[in-house]
Amino acid sequence: MEEVVIVGAGIAGLATAVALKKVGVRALILERSKGLRTTGTALALYPNAWVALDTLGVSDKLAALYAPFESGYMTDVKTKSIQEVHFLPNSRNGALPRAVHRKVLLEVLAEELPPNSIRFSSRITSMETQVEHGLSICIVTLDNGTIIKSKVVIGCDGIHSIVARWLGLRPPVYSGRSAVRGLSVFPKGHGFDHSHTIQQFVDVGKRAAFFTLNDKEVYWFFGATCPPKGVEKEADPEMTQREVVEDLAKDFPPVYLDIVKHSDLSSLTWAPLMFRYPWDILFGNLAQSNVTVAGDAMHPMTPELGQGGCLALEDAVVLGRHLGDSFSKHGKLVSQCVGVAIGRYAKERRLRAATLVTASYLSGWLQQDGSSRLMRFLRHVFYGFLLARVVNGITEYDCGKLPSVSSLPSCDSESSI
Image 1 (spheres, rainbow, N blue to C red):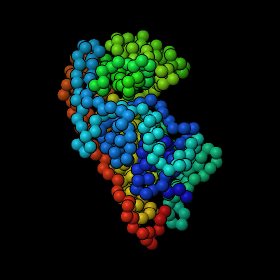
Image 2 (image 1 turned 45 degrees about the vertical axis):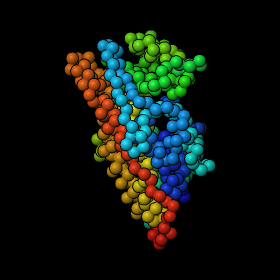
Image 3 (image 1 turned 90 degrees about the horizontal axis):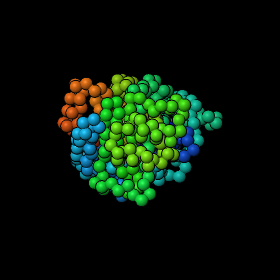
């Protein structure tokens, strides 16, 4: 019998396991891949994510490797106008946005866990809940026939989550936008000014961005309302790179095209941008008894505000806080209290997640869709007056702290799961 089973060793899964470890709860992570998943290469983490990382005890390790961004620039490809966004330090810890390698983030989180916490090549085929001796348990079956019983199951298994489907959440929907992502390498250095800014470029139906990770590596992104040609035929990375440079982004600034030309082809990925309807998050079944979801399994969203990974880290701390409160109160996981704790977690995350899913989608709609005079006016208002307020308002969020478990009460006579 496992205390907690976490499905998926992505950002949400690993961070949740770290949060639970800090409150004294053991977790087993089941990951279907053979190793840590690194799809996406890199991501920007905004101040709200650094608050969570600080709570998890790993922020210093990452901050030592990556410099902060103080500002970002949005360039209109047609008009050449440039809007600047200044990022405000978080009021709790003074954090600013930083870009990190996804692999490094996962490794830093994994290093915090006890040996054998992650079981790779473990694909779930089914799950069910049963009552044994009057207590609810979850039974997970793997593709090799292994059966695992757990007191709690947390689905951190991404956009096509088996756990979310088991809970009855409707599947994510296509946003009408697709994205190519890549990592460019300059062996002799990229030569960009080390002011560490995020550069974005917007055209009708298209949006691109890049930011530096270090002296030699630059992460880039290209999103459009039409996917690259041939993706249905599984086009090779070189073909995708060539289409971005010669067709989709041919009118974008030379500095951006040069970055795409320097891509490490093995890093290129293409994906349709999916999201869950916000009303499904607000009113859907995010938790049932001792089962819940976190990260993309709960709130897949489009990337315009860069909050997917940030919200996953928030989820981990909030879930750890609620389960930790229950554990600290009783000295163990108590049957009746676990469901209450998970329910409180789901209630706390609903509005926050639904709001950011909506804001991200609408941000992308304003930035990319339509060339009418009204849309151009709305984009001008959004870039000039709203974007900085939206970003800084969203990233000021504080997910809270984990309860101290230094002095747990002794186990009482209550029945544990």
